[in-house]
Image 1: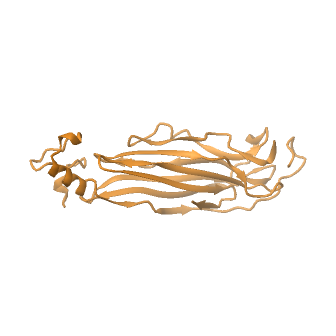
Image 2: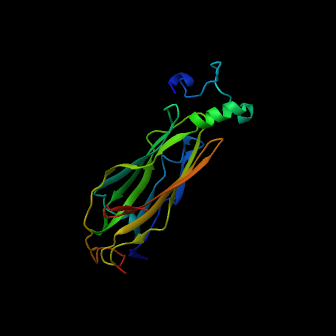
Image 3: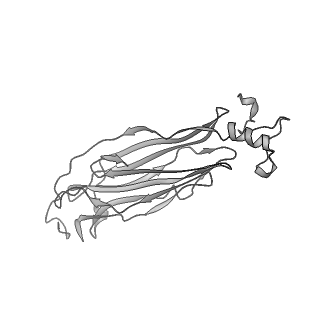
Length: 71
Length: 160
């Protein structure tokens, strides 16, 4: 399917070139099948893409420098 | 109260995407994992900011990305208290783009669970579990989703 089936905003177009209405009640059975197949049939991607991760040591907290004590 | 008890002194959750648009709550919302002491704000500056990024991407039969939402989880690691420990002074989610096309709706939330200490009493290492969850909906189907991460004060992280 090419991009002629949707307008510049990504709204699918009917055979007469007008955008589909948002209300599913205004879609014919054939249009529902068409939309279900092309507009709402999807490939999904969720994978982690990138990481920028640095690591640090964990030193002991100094005692006697403040009012809070180590448990 | 003790430096080895680790708490979140910021927010426990917020909305990320509401009805397909970035939530107004994103910009100022943050969580943390800091020592449970009166002067926790005296933490040192963190050593840096770590980042994990992934994307929620749905491509339809017209080869159009009908949902495209990159997500970036960031946390400031290795903030010190009295020169020690490794705490998370800020953790937040950045959404650089949110593109949701006709017929689709997206809602995502950020939730924080209670932080704990993954280190020792004398050298505490903050552990902060977070989750990003929500749903993509259309007139035909709903996809529920959740990503769970645990980030650590020493910069480490785990998924799941």
